[in-house]
Length: 175
Image (cartoon, rainbow, N blue to C red; front, side, top):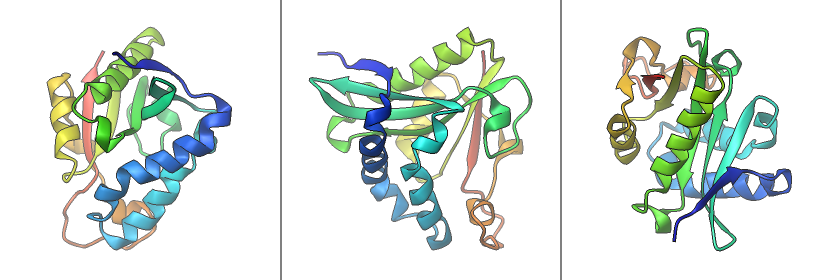
């Protein structure tokens, strides 16, 4: 049975926030300590994104199994992107539902919405430890854009690792 991909209802915001944090715990435990806490808070702050973004969910049999956020205008994202694009953020799928195509369905929904809105590209950041997500994005045609990488430690108020290692890997897809 396929999942219904739809806009999150405002009354679901707290549930989506809780699920986003839960579904990302495996990654958060591998993030640098100065990143994990602030990123967890960002994941949970779903309501603040509703004005500038589409919060999209995958639902099957009344159960939420995945979510993604599409920032409609790249200028509204926290990271500097070129003008004219959209940004995919915070894709997460219930670990028990992974491998069923939900991540791809949510990403394709974002690509279509961005295309229909006139965006010239869609961009995203991911982490090196998110190997499945990176493989998905590459399969769908996203290409690395290292000129837009960033170091999350510095972004979230830390001093950075000083190692030059970039955990915020940028990907971009021309539409």
